[in-house]
Length: 310
Image 1: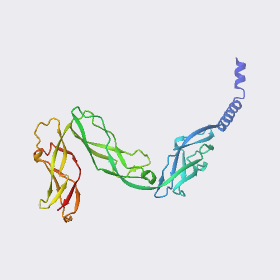
Image 2: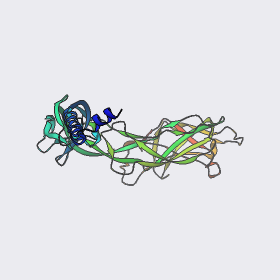
Image 3: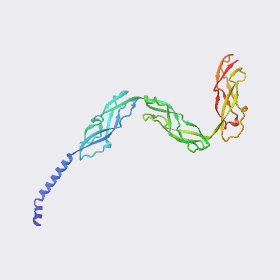
Image 4: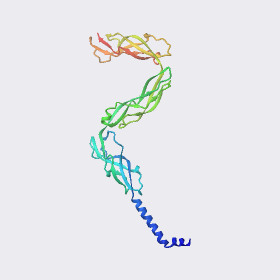
């Protein structure tokens, strides 16, 4: 046993030095080993000319092949491929993704290749346009009730984006408004939606919508003699009668007398009333005050009458 202890302790300093040098050699060799990987890198664009914007769909990332010493640690999320748009023109542009485009590459990391080294971008001029807002209504009101109008405030919104895409847009829709089971009118604040992600709202991206939910209605018809104002004007009206369709709530049990209603056409100042002159006018229906909140005029047939001055 003493023999082995003496053998172990003999030249102990030299043995420890040898072990330390071997460790240094091992760490150096280990550090020189390279690790290869393929990582997705996000695209970033700089120096976009004023008045232009990207109009097409394009890859948001490119894959790059990297090699690095195993001792080097790297946060791939910090990498980006930066594309300079300084010299682009309206229309299609093909832009290179070079090794020099990669930002935040740690020291010792090398780029072995870029899988997609060309990006196709369509540049279009930025335009603005006012479009109407269309409320989207879903669901059914409570039984015995029906959906009336949906009034939007504001009724229009300003939208901007690439000119060619903007030309295809005529309206912006609201998020769905559910009327399921409703028996009363209500006001709801909703957000707007554009199907094209390249377009954006310049003004507010939300609106107020007043949704009318009311009792179901039934229709009634009546014939009315068309009268003229001012009464002193001598005319011949053709046809002399119009058929008026009105609606009332289904629970309404009152009496409706056509004699309480008027169909009127008005001769405006400045109209040539020379005998033989003919104009087309739209009759307006005067509803009795007592029925004003109950009766609704749904249709007038014909929509216009012919007025000939005598």
